[in-house]
Amino acid sequence: MKTNKTKPMIIAMDGPAGSGKSTTARMVAERLKLPYLDTGAMYRAVTLVAIEKKIPLTAEAKVAALAAKIPLRFGKLKAGEQSVWLGRRNISRDIRTPELTAQVHHAASSGAVRSKLVLLQRRTAQIGGGVIEGRDIGTVVFPDTPYKYYLDADVRLRSRRRYRELKAKGLKATFAQILKDQKERDYRDANRKIAPLRKADDATLIDTTKLTISQTADIICDLILGQKPRLKSGRN
Ligand code: DC
Image (cartoon, rainbow, N blue to C red; front, side, top):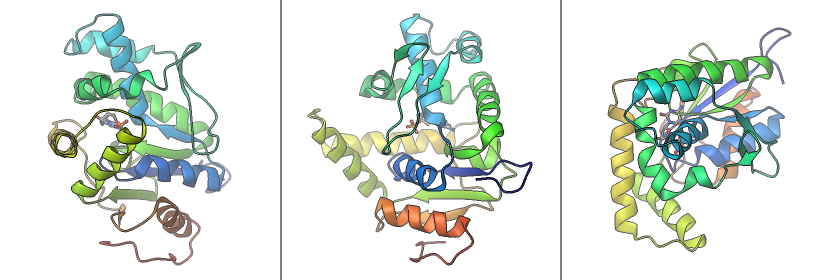
């Protein structure tokens, strides 16, 4: 799907962890037959490689050098799932462990790393467009796209979603700990000096607290296709 003959359609989806952004972004991409780009997976992959190469995560220049030549590849989006590859190695699971999640903020708060990954994100999406998901897509990576959505939800609900996910995977977790982690991540994302998480002025805010993923995807697809949304999009 293209906006016109020359410009690929870029759909920016930002928001905090647990807002339903990833699942919604994948659903929107599948419905609109657009590629999907998970930019969080890029920060995670760089963190994984740095840890495995024993490069301190605070050594910005070295981590940025890794980011500049990371052989990252994404599998085809299929039934809401997408694999992430480092060369021939499938790193889909390795980049989502709680240990790695606790470390990824180093790469995300480094200007040197961000500038390399932003270049990669632009290069990847500029060819065929896509649904690009992250924290700074509407503000920094693709500020000119007219399709910007910012998903948010109550922090307790986001934590409850995460708690259920971990329990379903058989992982040990307490709700209190997850809520605390979530608040810390929100604070870090919103308060870092470079490209902090914030809604672009011209982004549509969708509060997903009372919406299912499918309802959220309906609203976004309807807005994109220029129709009236089927449901009110919360605080907008
Ligand atoms: O969405 P996620 O949890 O997979 O993101 C992983 C980390 O990367 C998280 O700390 C937020 C950060 N991130 C970012 O700073 N900018 C993006 N565009 C995407 C993710």
